[in-house]
Amino acid sequence: MDSLRKSKLRSFLTLLGIILATSTLIAVTSFVNGMNVYISTKLSNMGSDGFRVVRIAFIGNWDPKKFIEAQRRNPQIKPEEYEFIKEHATLLRDIGMQTWKSVTASYAGENMTSVNLEGVTANIPALSNIEVGVGRGITEQEVRRHAPIAFIGSDIADRFFSGVDPVRKTLKVNGTPYEVVGVAKAQGSVFGQSQDSFVMVPVYSYFKTWGLHNELQFLAKAADPNHLNEAQDEVRMLLRAYRHIRPGQDDTFTMFGSDTFATAWHNLTGAIAAMAFGVVSVFLVVGGIVIMNIMLAVVTERTHEIGIRKSLGARRSDILNQFLVESSVLAAIGGLLGVIIAYMLAVVVRNTTPLPMVMPIFSVALGVGLSVAVGLFFGIYPARQASKLDPIVALHQE
Image (cartoon, rainbow, N blue to C red):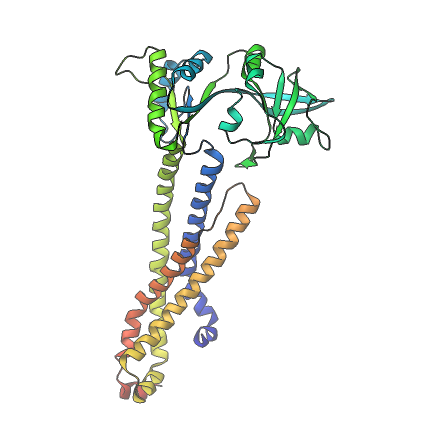
């Protein structure tokens, strides 16, 4: 530590490669880990037993030809298909229907644009992991009788009903009045986009006012996570039978679950990790070579000291361990500095952008461990050179 303090600039330049390698490694793993949490809690809110049926969805590799072909081939999903699946499926715990459009909500002369109006069955909030904060949700009876009622997000409540009870107030959506029956608990945002700016109305009330021109999707839950694949196969079979799709013909709809998001994300993170590994490897090798060169210079500077130690009984292993410890401590300090820089970067990114950053403990241990290993590996040659010095020759060195 004394020798490091005496040559601060040299020590910092020696550690620069290790610092960059460690901070890059931890920053990338923090981003990937944060995104994994984000995907599982925000984007993929279906759970381990949930899946969706939509007209078209491309998750993963984008193929414009297939997309255009699906646009031409796949018909709109219909409410009759939902009723058919609900009646005949045996491996589902629940299934719901949902459609949506962007609207303007108004109350007492105030307007709020870009509100997401959703036509839903009564079970959609539960299937989407949306909890009731105030009042209640939509009931099945209200869905069947086309009731003009609404279940709203917390952003709508904060904008129009701050400080008052919104239940039984009349909210207008594109001029159509709906009686508010409840408010959802806040869900936060996804990549800076609020998830609480919505108005849910009974799906048949939605059809009555706005028709069937918008996309429709089904949200389903398998009886249990162990039978997710069987439940998906059953729904696929029922929908193919309803649409009279012959064996060998492609599906005219798309089905995906949480595992689809996970697979697509893991493919992406695999590429990110490979790129980061290449960058980190270059930094580590460069940092290791610099450490080796500096330690060779240190051996030359301390040749006289080595001669004195050996003349007083120091063994080759003592000299070897001295320089190995010094090079590994040097690299470990670089690793710790890299951890601090990566942590500060993660805090800044997390607080100033919608990108999630969660620093896993294993990445910190890996970064510091790799730094120490590099110090040991590239310190072996200088340490061996020091341990092989002849004490008589070394003592003549000034």
